[in-house]
Length: 378
Ligand code: SF4
Ligand code: SF4
Image (cartoon, rainbow, N blue to C red; front, side):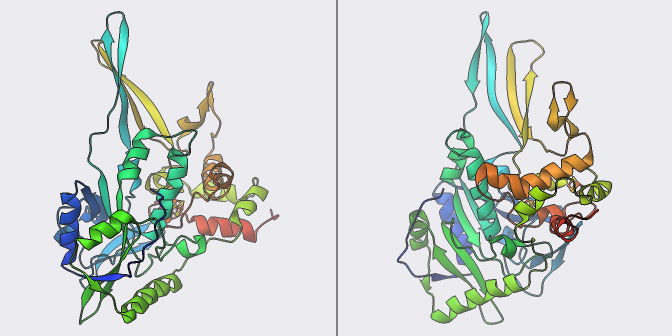
């Protein structure tokens, strides 16, 4: 988790073939390696046995309500940007048993669920996603209310970051100060250097365990030109970004709770909750108690929920947010404004997933801009 590490080791170079060595080294250290895989016409995060299973030569084209994989003109391993999955599904699983109980005489014996999986190593974590992990740390590990399962999984996780070589059409991390260059929060960080003559990775160690693992991989010193090339790659990705969040959005939304734009967006929004399910920071959940018909055992499960469901705000005989207008406003103002009051950070990292996976292409940067443009208007 957030440990400070000051490495005197200069960035190194790994050959393309060393990616497989990295995966094997992580497995040898007891990690379950999770990485990008092509499944069901999308790039998802799934167990990764081999570097050959990475989405070699695939790009993703993204826009509001649109996601399409296309073959690229080179065999890069990490040319795609981000897909519908985020790492939260491993640290904060979509469905999780919290406890089981067994009838015992006239009472019940409660057994808390124990962690069963080995620690995770995540390969291909983007800068915005590292920021998203750190935002979820404030939710699940904030001292007063810590989730022990999340904390254990997060503390043990090994993060292999990858710098973005291009933005997706829906990214706006530059305007959120969350990317595209990865600067902290990783154990190892890779920048893919690929052209007709070469295919290497510039690798930086960001923690003691990252440096220890790097020492086991075949690597060589990186020449100064490669450092410049890596810098150029992320600078170009930043310049190519097509979307941006308006400045001072938190105060803007606080000033405009009754802006007519909330009603306009509600006429398009389907209240489907897709945006909250793909968002790497959303954390709403519900609990479900399950009893076995014989009455001998009972279980409590936690599963992801969404502020877009009408039941989510059901309190004492009624839902507080009955209209789509109030549910969309709740989501956007929480993400971009009241999250600051609650967790001292934005709840958005500019990954663009909610724009891509919204079936009607609602774009939060556009909504914020419309409120800014029409501020005080009717
Ligand atoms: S609100 Fe949208 S852009 Fe922001 S972090 Fe969530 S999914 Fe990404
Ligand atoms: S904004 Fe889009 S993704 Fe989110 S609930 Fe509305 S229609 Fe669904």
